[in-house]
Image 1 (cartoon, rainbow, N blue to C red):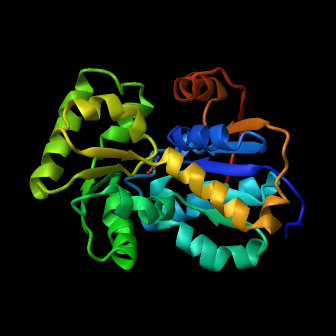
Image 2: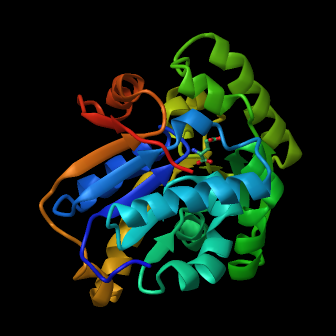
Length: 277
Ligand code: DGL
């Protein structure tokens, strides 16, 4: 179906959140070309079922393959939790076995034992990510001595998507979930922001965080992990084009995306509206 051509790195998220990951990837690896796709028209993915998140994510991956991407990063925890495994294990063989799709959960899990001293870790994510138990399952496989507590924060993504991440209304929802997870396990010393939108709430979260608790944001770690992957996989690295360009695609209005994205990326960008199905 697809040929072994060279092309850009694809970065996918349900909306804007993946830009927090994309920003760190591009900072660390500026020479590559990138295509970012935000499925804003169908965001948020957090409350959607496994079947729907899988179907939407698969469509986005096929779109990025059609854009010529040999490698796609699912810069979305919900998509990584609910769709990545099936795409890797089933769809790639049918679509193009030479391409790769990577997620954000594994790179985060790999480093978590180094980050936590108490070995009590809290995961803050969408309802989809928390109910999938992907983090608990993956951490238990790699570090069975770590106790994991998850907390779904269903209002956080809508607040960010609606530019309310700095408003006083956010305080209630941030305080509620931080209080809840820390009373569920008072020995937690590390809270993972397991949703790519949450780094925008970092300031607010810190306001309600007791001293000594580390807030772990995934962007830099995912970028380092990709760098490492490319060093270990020269057959993939050599297929990636290197002109330092970035294109931005959205399934919603290009103007809306461009305006919101400038908050995430601190610079104006040009955006193309597309349809995927
Ligand atoms: N940014 C996505 C994540 O990392 C979730 C946003 C959504 O619910 O669509 O989980």
